[in-house]
Length: 182
Image (tube, rainbow, N blue to C red; front, side, top):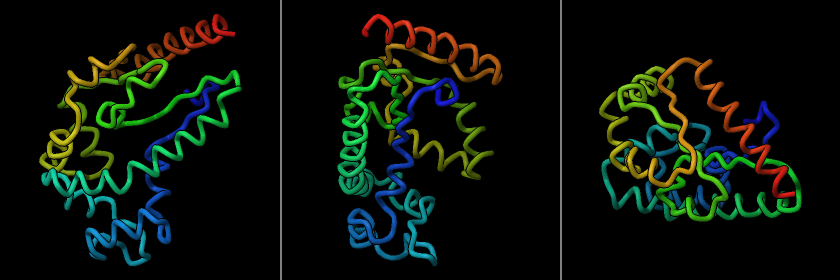
């Protein structure tokens, strides 16, 4: 979407920034989960933290209580600065359904892929085991819940060309909507 001209607000990028050393959320994470979740340079070891919280609903809830408010506040601030612009703004929010944000978006696009494809890709990209991946999936909204929240579905089990074709159709629809709303 960025390559097509959208302004992208990446919730994961914001989430990494709000837990940087010295940030209030970093201090709360260390207080709640201990220094063992940190790397030698004092940054949060995200895979280590994930191994602590996924599979334990209370710990996952504590993580979310610490990180979600500053992430949501930063997204809101960025959106406010873009409110008067004519830009197409994409919020890349993997947990949109889980945090109840789907109802506040103008249009919700959900990218789907089979469980097998998601496991294969995460194992290759992040070196995670299938069980680690399944634990994360169990802690998140189901594919059905995400699809139910969607205004637009993009299937991502195929080739990059097939994905690009679907994104092109979405982009044309967004441009038409922007022109209509001006």
